[in-house]
Length: 537
Picture: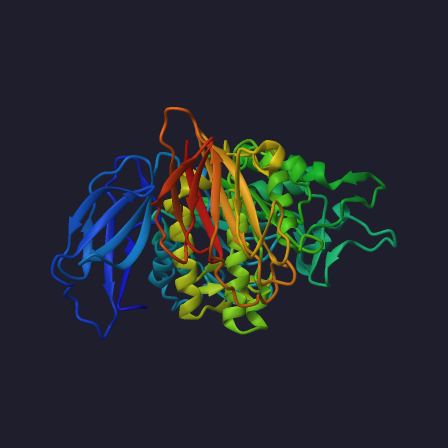
């Protein structure tokens, strides 16, 4: 923790509910704040409220209209700390997803809830909380799971309550077609078989059944309903392993697994109409079939060949095209934190976030009390260093504060309609860097979107990179200076250009605009990793 940290009291606030900010001081720092300190509240760069503060503690803000807000602790013109808040009538319209994967009796559940508040996480996946994959509650109140991890259902319930008290949904993990060796004899008649006749499996640990078999779906529905009643989950994370796509059962029936998944999702929705449901489309399979179903997110776990920034973009675009407006989440695990120096991994995470946030998606990465996912078996997570948590805090604050320019599903991609000599409507140039419309190593990646009547330009600095892999150590980033924005302005109107940067000035600030014939021209501040430019025509 720096000397002063701001954390909202909840991860999200309901319409009409006054947010509140907790000011935390480091253990060895004085609680008193500099004279004249205040919390300044900004809506897309415009100051809308000021609350005087005198010392560390909790301070209510005035009621705010729906939207994302930046909160700055200021004194003598200096910004001492920042955070953000979300006010919304529909908290499920966004999914900022986190995880928890340990449930020992002595767990500090409040520490996990504090991280959710700090990063504005509004859904937490409870990974491997159950007794067995095909018998969720068969272990009683305390047991070891299938891989010998100690589980206390009292801890699970305490976590659920701690998260719920700060506006976070608890989403229980449940594999949709996995059966362990102890239960296999009861389900092997529904096995999905390999060409050799052996059942498809996850190693020798879990065997795969047809998720749409009538007997299985009835059991699965009942197991989830019982878990909701006995434990209290707000919803479920419905997991699969990405294979097989087609298979046969022991009676010779051919199974289209995408269709089986779709039927299972519909069955679970009928059983739990109010639950928050998240289905895992492993490596985009089968997003085209499931994204339009009655679930609360389009969630995708990318693997090779989806290993570049451009491939992440294509995954998000396909998800948006198939969805019905749900939030898009990618479980892009940054394995690289486990193998390279922290700073190199932080830069990789920043490029991943810049790519996803600028395309209206979020990333599942952080959870517990301050840990990172570096492995698909979530128990093998990694404790984040303070610098990494500070990075995530800045960037998650930025995404919440600028939600209206980033996340709404109605935002349109217009790059190819605006940039270039033929269009001549808007573009950015740098004296020492190529500008491209796709992520190219050695260049500045430029993207333009239409947000209502306004335009938003995203610049991502790849000038120092030799490839665009998202899960690889990244070279040190040199700021790119001298950027110039030119765009065709409207007769009789004064255009406005504002710029924000999660690693620089984090809220939108005006830059000077001059008129040059048909064009308006603005000199841009130096580009760090990602810069957002808001153009009001």
